[in-house]
Length: 87
Image 1: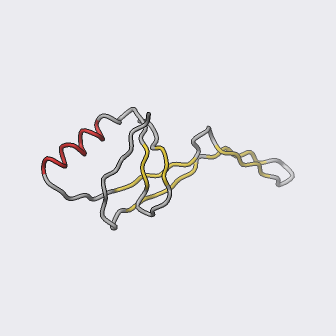
Image 2: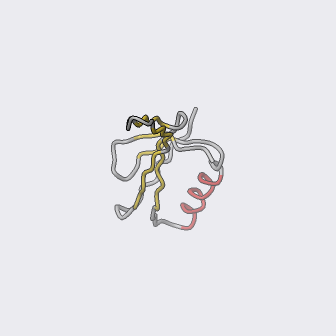
């Protein structure tokens, strides 16, 4: 079973999205674009969180235990639960 990131974050979180694509341009002007791999879209988030030192320790332990393991989370825009990328 996959773990879930359940800590609340501040509404000032900033995120960026990117997509990885492959493109092929043909001589007649036609261009073909396709996603690169099965995870062709990614998000990167800068999150702020405040709490007690013991809560911070639990949060850090969760993140450190998921360096190479995915987890479920809902981004600050809300309603978009997704599986985090591994690594």
